[in-house]
Amino acid sequence: MPLNSFAKDLIATFPLGFVATVTEDGRPAVSPKGTFLVLDDATIAFGEIRSPGTLANLAHRAEAEVNFIDQWKRKGVRVRGAARLVEPGAEFEGLIGRWRETWGDLAERINVLVLISADEVRPVTTPPYDDGVTEEEMIALYKAKFAEIYP
Image (cartoon, rainbow, N blue to C red; front, side, top):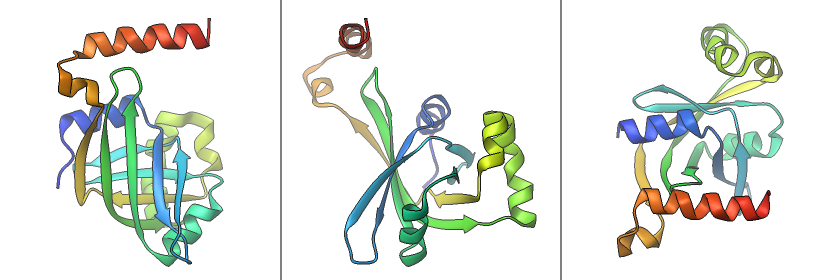
């Protein structure tokens, strides 16, 4: 299933994705990854910097679901699919330039690239939208809440 323009724009603007994997003993594991990029219409990827648990889980079961959320609009996307690890070598060198362009020096700390196919892409919204709340109202509400937390 291809990534639509909403999903691509969201990931570009809010590249922090919460990656869900499964441990070897079948337990769920979620870990945030902040270096996501959209590689093409059917692939997202992050640069692994310090995620030994996530890599171990993907080695056991090469599937992941990632959630991205616009914290102001309270809208997002869930991307589920097969994961593939790209270790240093020719393919890694062909891809890492995209992280260097976006993340600068942080890209030098990337050990492995994790590519996730967008086999399933679904929207995420909050219940107030069901009641007719607008994006503008959601943004105003959460700007006020964040202003209270971080004056």
